[in-house]
Length: 202
Length: 242
Image 1 (cartoon, rainbow over the protein chains, first blue to last red):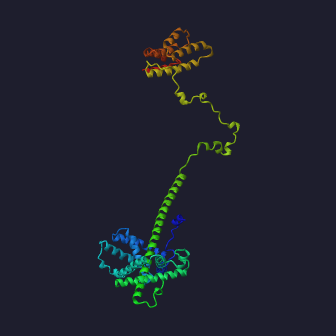
Image 2 (cartoon, rainbow over the protein chains, first blue to last red; image 1 turned 90 degrees about the vertical axis):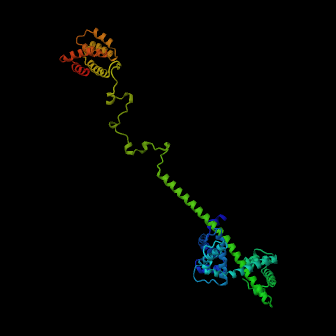
Image 3 (cartoon, rainbow over the protein chains, first blue to last red; image 1 turned 180 degrees about the vertical axis):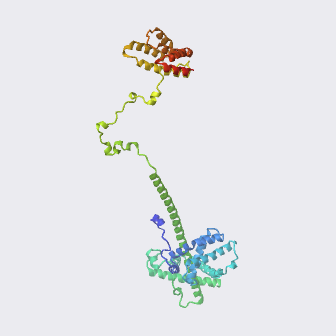
């Protein structure tokens, strides 16, 4: 079976014949759609890395970071579909991420001021999101099991309640009991976040 | 994404709503990160498969090319049939040609090599009648050989009533052929046949004894004799020796 998989290697873009179909897939956080747009942008990202004289190992990092930013923009509505290839926009993001990487490495081949579009990356917003991410990560750790697992499976890994129950991923054998537990855990999580905000005066 | 309002208390204050909003953002971001990480793993697997598929396809292409080249090379190279599988000649001959021939058209019976007549070339290369005398020069030796040939022919020309003369003649010629001029001379001097050309035989014996001057005197006498059976031969000998 594994050998068959190796040789079959289906084209991830097969399900997305038009740009719109791909955009809708990305909006729904469909893994196949994300893989498709990444593969379409991969060669351009490799060229960018070479162009900015960054180490080749950074191709993956730049592609992942760019995808993350792209997905955020699609979700919050700052990227609107205009019949253009989504991969073109991803490459544009990758270009700015690569420039940021050159700044990090103090290798800036061009002055960053020359790239006005860098503002589009919303550095402040990005920092705010990172802060929120770290906070939730920490609070989930504080909550411990089974809350951490219950919240992760649904809100982070994207499993439906039916799937979690069917595959017996948790100790809860019914959808209702799982939902009740998760609701309870979420309230605890929000409460912890509220306390943290009071403590840090934010 | 679920509606986070369901997790808020009915009398939720501003702080609680802000905290819920931050949790929603954080969870959303974690979900993106998780998705991107999962897709990154899928991308690696896909790229690896593609790479291997290209390598496999390349190897397959090379193998097919090599196999094709070998096939055509083998096809173009004529391979000789193994000896055991060679078709017999009679099978190759068309039936009309392999039919038996009429008696009068039958092929000439093959004569064994030892019994066949000598060819013209072989006759020309016939060995000398006598053994070459090493003390004599090549010209004299060749001349003696030629003259002996004529002498033998003369021996064959004896008539039936001249059998005694023929025997004596053959005996002397044989001795001359054996390079025994002294013995030949002894036989010549013993003979008393008037019609035997003993002068000719004596000249040959003198030649074999490497006495060409003496032989020339006799050859001159024969050449000057009218209608002598060895007249022409004597003249040739004189011309050769001089």
